[in-house]
Length: 259
Image (tube, rainbow, N blue to C red; front, top):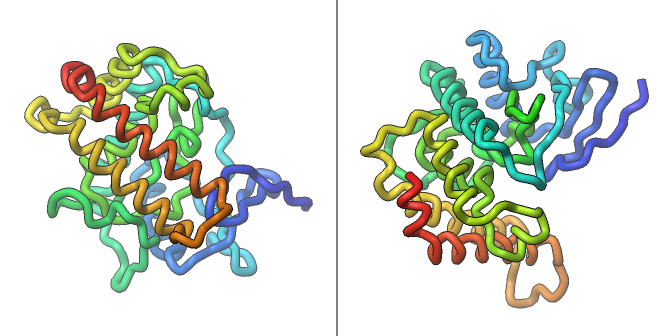
């Protein structure tokens, strides 16, 4: 059967073959597959299933999840709340997951952020990785960065990217609503997750911390050095992240009050 390349695969090549997604495997793939099998056993509907053994000639094989993406536009309030609820369902489903001995996870920059409590998360709950139906989130794709994470750190990442806490340049490019609306989306995400009131104090600071580290992680992954003279994707990736961080700092009071 013919394969069609899918966009948005990020670090690896991704193709669709009928109802099957095939993508290049990495050292972390075996651990991710044990996680996906665990989620299937928990009846967590928000993740793809392995097809067969999960591998075919060195590439992983997963079910294709039908739906659409809101990116680059914003979620509705109900959609934003659904993002928080989907993430909470994931954390609940992985609470009793035991990684295999010697599990190898993708070397993601957020692993060592936050406190000592860890869950196994998706670690890239961005709008380009959330499949929607009827404008509501139903599943997460692209699980290669999955692994141990402080749940508040993962919620901060998801809140930043899905509430679209970006600067005016990105807001103009993506047609985003004004600050007050995006602050309401932030509140909807943490409400959907069920974050207790006591944990909301300082949550915007957790978002800022994550944005700073994410910007540095983007630079490291792209190999940015003083000698770099031409790498527009990497430079833009750092620019929109850094500008988002500055925008959040400038609007911290409004965002804090929304919590």
